[in-house]
Amino acid sequence: MKIADLGSVKLHYREDGDPAGPPVVFINSLGTDLRLWDPVLPHLPEGLRLIRYDLRGHGLSDCPEAPYSMGALITDAERLVEHLDIAEAVVVGLSIGGMIAQGLAVKRLDLVRGMVISNTAAKIGTRAMWDERIAAVRAGGIEALADAVLERWFSRAFRATSQVTLWRNMLVRQPAEGYIGCAAAISHTDFYTPTSDLSLPALAIAGSEDGSTPPDLVRETADLIKGSRFHLVRGAGHLPCVEKPEEYAETLTTFFREIGHV
Image (cartoon, one colour):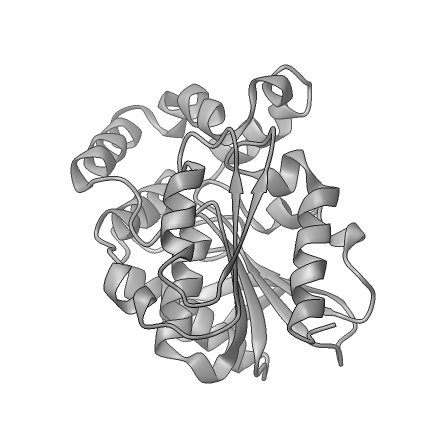
């Protein structure tokens, strides 16, 4: 386990693969941690430098008092990349991680060679919706939302397997303050204008059964970026990297090869 002291926050991160290889930075979703990417990594080609970290308020990273701003989350990613002396990374972000990836590319295109925005959008939900969820967590903890979250995260078929217990446990064991902090950041974010100004290799991934960011919403965001690619993972929900890890990894690998990053 490694901790990066970034001044305002300490982030837990992990590196796998070739330390001298082309860097890929993975950013997790709300209510998960860096283990989100465990099913995918074994299926990626050798020779990549694979970096994962826990968002602030998640996993083993610091959990400052809520709320958080999206700007702070983007700065966390920026400072971690600089801390690790990374340049021209491909950034892979899912849900809020995809929003952070968009913001990082807008702010520091010198650090980002390509971007994969998975199950995300330039704007997710409404402020009223997020305020409702924040109030529910303050009143009853993440447990109060868990069943509804899992319905959005996973297809009916996956929810019928024993594997869903692992992800439920991961969700409810995240710090409530961290969940609230990141939910507040999402609620105040609208990246339609800045994302539409981006010009870089980009891939958008959606799940056909995603109840949080439906495919049409993901495609709409992809269409903001000139020349972006779009891939639909059929039979998967909000976390296709969990339900269909081989297809997800193959999609990433194809993108890496197309842009010469592997």
